[in-house]
Length: 254
Image (cartoon, rainbow, N blue to C red; front, side, top):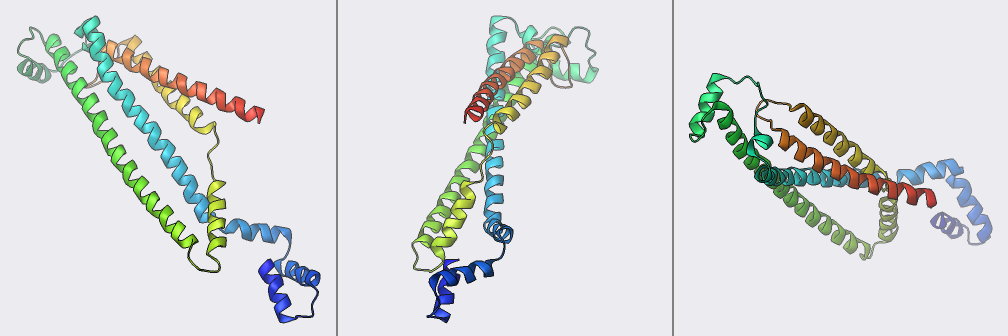
């Protein structure tokens, strides 16, 4: 608007500054037109910032989930040492087993006297290795991706800083517009906590039901293991619930 008023004065030096500003305002159009144009500037920046915020929150929640998986693997081993391997990793009583599976379990667990004992020992070994190894591998991949993303963002910020100090007429205004658009794009404070409470709380209830019914899934069973996973998931849900209540209270007060 100031540039438009200056252009009016440059074209007519005898024009009154107030009249030049009025002409500039008339050229801009109505308030709705100006607002629509202003909101269009930096829209891509705001959308990318929103997607980045959502992706970052989702990745952090997934990382917490893999940490829970690793903790469950260790917790199940501890519970097996305190109680028994059969309680934590054993097949439910009366579970039908395929003859080929029994032969495989007995071949890899020669110290076992029965098919059920061999299945329990094999489940204890496989569950610990797959849970802990898979979780650590996933966390390593997430860490690498997060590190590369941080380096890319750092390079982008450095490039923007150089562009800001470059001797271009419109660079400061463009940078200010992008910075303003990005700063206004924030997730609601209650969003991540309520999603975390729902996801981990629902998962914990499903795992608890599996423990109570002593559910046996193909390649996955063990009442004690279900209990450990349920407790860890519900504990994480409780933390998210506390964060949600705090964010909700802060929002209500503000």
